[in-house]
Image 1: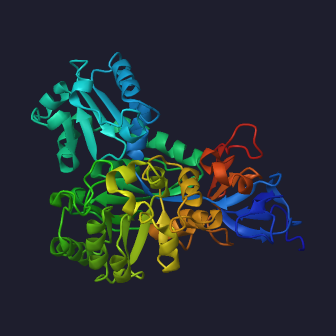
Image 2 (image 1 turned 90 degrees about the vertical axis):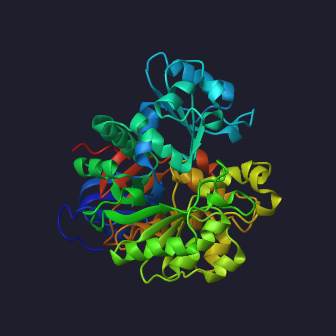
Length: 477
């Protein structure tokens, strides 16, 4: 390749392994876009970095996040790492020493030796209000003081679920400054995990907060249906509306056969009426559907649409429903990290029975049918490699993917969910220079992928995160 002038590239990365391009070992970046993919070129660059054989993957695109909650978890109290109810209660007690109101996130009884929900009696160690959200966000436990504030002293065991959680908003919603700080924290977490774009679930206040922030990665917002307002404008930044057809498996509120009928929040006619109204406004719909009854309603409704919609989670699904799915108008937004609970002896087997062990999250079957599949994390936790680990190492062939397939679902597949597959998700000339850079031994670490972290994250050609002492340095604006 001949020399085409001085400083052809803003950044040239060479001596690297490039995902999907075994024929190349160098990437040239100009004006935030990929300008060249090839063998070590002769052209000069403002900056050149020898990556020492590191792997360059497309930047991960997380198709389903809750960034505000992620940031608040860091600002308030996190119960994510607790391994027993006793440990969780001790953390909450400690929090009361410095806070008049304790709001905690992401306890998961399925990871505790007690295998029991937090209950009001566990939290009545203090006269200060305590609110503790389960990991899935579909239920919360309150102590007596908090129940009194929200006028729900009648709540069984202090537990509120689903629509009742709206009662907590005046108590737990952050003010403007805390909201902005939480989002900034979440951005940094995402960049450390190699995430360069997200589709985030937001209420109206968070959508407005995004407009006031400088965002170091691509953020596409979908607003909750009950937060939709008259002046909402569909745009590349505003994906559409998020609505709920059911709850979760962990909170026993999914629309699963044999579970309470009210778990299904809308029947086919009701959901079709909602969707037709939104489609008439030019707004696509993202339907939260986990149980097979909810999934069936979503699939049948979206088959009537001429525009692209998405089903969020898409975990439990009958073969008959798969036969009815219109792949041209229905994208599947799945969370491979949910397979953490689907292992033998795990929560799914305990809640759903052995019948569903090999039938949940059947990614291999979905791809064989030609369905458009994108991955996300639901911030449980936010970490693409964490989810990819479970998809690649599933003991069940119907779920298991190759590393290459899983990465593709978490990059180009999710870029399609965002409606940005013409600019994100692949390493191709002309696309955004968004990358996640990993150590050279990445392909050899298949059995421990969830422990692997990027050594750098590049967004629009700029190094947005770099591990200290690594081959790339953080760009200073």
